[in-house]
Image (cartoon, rainbow, N blue to C red; front, top):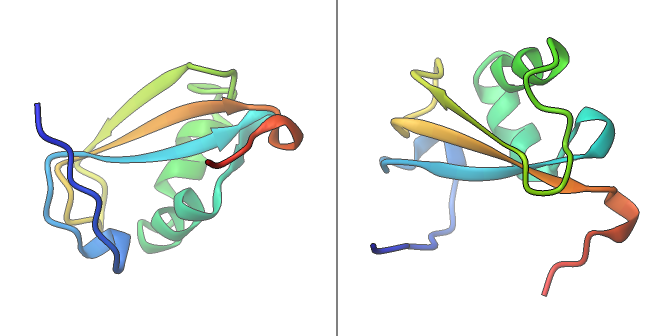
Length: 87
């Protein structure tokens, strides 16, 4: 399996899947907010209806998101924001 990390506008990335995080209490991460804005709030809609609560390790795969070039968007639960540490 090959993973590629690229910079630039997330919604314009032509790829099989973009992975973004959701904190506990259904709060979107900054990268998820970027995609959510481009998609006219499709990510927030999925999270708001209870499909993902942000629990650490939980996942939700979304397909055919409007205005997003990627085939899929994988939302991954990051747990509590105060405990999340990027390394």
